[in-house]
Image (tube, rainbow, N blue to C red; front, side):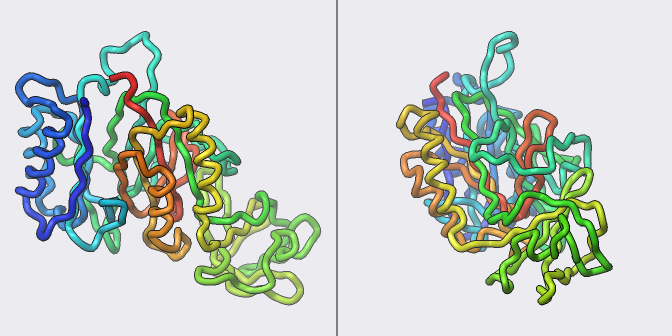
Length: 363
C-alpha cells in the first residue's frame, strides 16, 4: 500500500500528537522515510492546534521528507464515523509517488484538487459557469473547496508547500483513478429561477404575472426549523434573503430588498435532506466502480454561520453508512464549493456537502 489515512482524537492539542499521527500514517502506508518517495501529505487539525501550525508544518516536512504538505485548521473533522470539532483532533494522509501528478505530461490521467480558503473564491479570478445549480447528482468537477475561518471571521492557519500559506488560498492536487464527485445542497428548491416583475422595498409582489408566493410555490406558512430563504442571483454569485412574512395577497415580506429584473427562487430545508439524495449517489457509484466499494472518499461540508444548513451530524453519518467500506478523509468548514479547472461550478454555500470517491488502481 502506498497511501494511508490516520484520524484521531486527542486529550489535549500537542505537537507530539501530530508527530504520532504522522508516524502511524507512514507505518500503515509501509513508506520508509529514507528509501520511499512521499508525494503528498495532508494535515488537517481542529482549531485547538491553530497556535502551533507552523510547528505542525515543520514536523510534517521533517517526518516525511516531503515539502508538499497541505492542510490547516478547520471547524470539524470526521473521526471514526462521527463529526468532532469541540475536542482536539487530527487527520493525516500520506501518499506515495504513484499519486504524483508531475512526470506524466502527455499521458491522460485523472486528478482531484482540494482547496482551503478564507475568502469567497468567486470574488477573485474565477469564472462562474452558470447561475443554476447542475441538475444531476454527478458533477464534472476536479476540485473540492472549503472556506475555513473561525468565529467572528478569525483567521485559522492554512498550510501550503510545507509552510504557512500567506495568501487566501491553499491547494493540493492528487493523481487518482476514476474519481466521482457528488454534491448535496441540503435544500429543496421549490421552482427554477424566475425573474422579478414587481417589488417595493422589502416586499416581493409579482413574478410571471402571478403573486410572488404563487409563482414561487411558497408554502402557506414558514417551515421549521430554519424557515424559507429566497436565493437571489447576481452576475458573479448569489445571496440569501430570509422570508419574513407571507401575506394573504401573495406578497412576500423579505429581510432585504430585491429589485425588478433579478432572478430568484425559494428554498426550504427539509428533514433528512441527504437521505433523499443518497440512493442516487449509490446508483452512480455502483455504475462508476462496477458494484465495488470505492477505496477512498474525501468529504467537504459547510455547516457553519447559518441555520440554512444540514440540520444535524446525521447527514454525515448517512453518507458514511452508505459507503461503509470506503476509507474517509472528511472536514467541515463555513462553506463548500466545486470547481472545474478555473470555472466555479457551485458557489460557496454553508449547507453544501460534497464528496469525491476514487480508487488507487494506478498504484
